Image 1 (cartoon, each protein chain N blue to C red):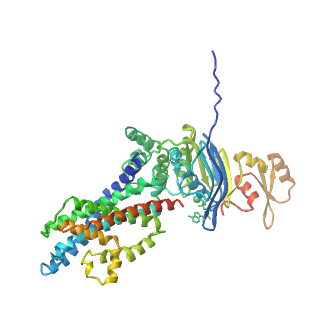
Image 2: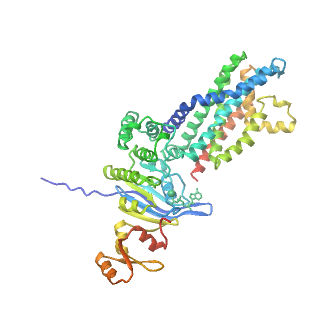
Image 3: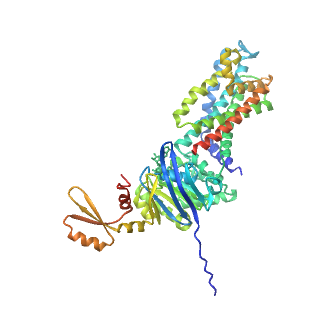
Length: 245
Length: 292
Ligand SMILES: Nc1ncnc2c1ncn2[C@@H]1O[C@H](COP(=O)(O)OP(=O)(O)O)[C@@H](O)[C@H]1O
Ligand SMILES: [Mg+2]
């Protein structure tokens, strides 16, 4: 019954296992640089939203880093699809598209959670106290699922590597910088604020930050995240069906 | 002693009717009809761009046909693909093995995707590796494999779930002659020992003639003729006399070698007798060669 899900996950995790050291090392560097530059650089002198900047920053880094990882399966899917045609093995097998999407999404979530754990380790080094409760887990699972399914959607829609790079440059990277990961979006001019609140990462970051720093979680934002997750799950299914055009 | 004679009825595994696939304004296949029975070894022979790969993709669920019907054992494949996918095996034109996985892991992945019961997996995989002659490379990453080894791995992978029909898309393209022979032997063994129906596409005349008991010849998305290679050649006459004129070669067809010899004797030019090939059949029908 779940053999499609299992198969996809077996494949992705086994490939990951062989590159794990390199991948984890590579993905651990950029959040560390941010922490050194902005966390230590600004020190305790800067407070944002009533929090020391580094305490404000770490949840933002978690949102960013886990997004990078779970959305990042798009690139891997691209390679398996266009260069090695491995994806055809999934399409030929007697398994449903739902299982393929869920299997890939689970892999993206796994990678996102791994990078989250890494930043938790950094937070200990930088002696930042975080509250890790059930609401946080709900938030990070929704967050990584929604960006993994967005990644699947994009990977199935683009025609090649170049397209993929274009999407990253013009959509993903600006989103990462504008969605309140490094500064509070409420300081933005009104026009920008509208734009930024249309991006799913803005809601994710707010919810993740609130849960980790003991603030109030805005349930509307969590609901919006769930909405995005459901929408991207459906677009991913639609995009796979389109591959069979 | 009473002998009960069982008249074995040969069932149709696959029937396709009026398959059309358009990519935008480009018509890749244009009304393909096919029938494959249990145990058949059928070839789909045609030049590059004729629509062979598109046909295979349409028959295996990788591409949705624009028009037409596909039935496996009488069941509508386009409506209910899951059922039929269980007894389809596909060897695509590119060896789409997972480079980062070992041979064993590649096969294990297939065994999960095709819901082979867990206790049977290991034994079946070891058997497959042996059949492909890859048992010594079981735990090597596939990226270290040669082209021929990858082909053999893809072949046995497609067989792992014991399909009733195997699709082979240009199975020896890009391989050395020696390795090609090796793959041919493997394919024949599969058809004979396992009694599996095979649909093989190729643009190599020799491959179609050596392996296939029946052939469809395809050009520009249409089947132009079908029949057993022997019958198709007999219909042409069986023997060709090539007459070397000053500016061209003229071909004359004869139904026996003696007739051809008699003509050769009275012919005032340099001449050569050879057997008819499927290439001659193709040239006669389309006015061009299969391999340019
Ligand atoms: N995805 C596609 N988009 C547009 N045209 C295609 C596509 N796939 C195949 N074609 C075209 O359809 C025709 C048949 O291709 P194909 O089935 O690959 O031929 P063969 O396998 O016999 O070489 C070719 O002209 C090819 O360019
Ligand atoms: Mg082809």
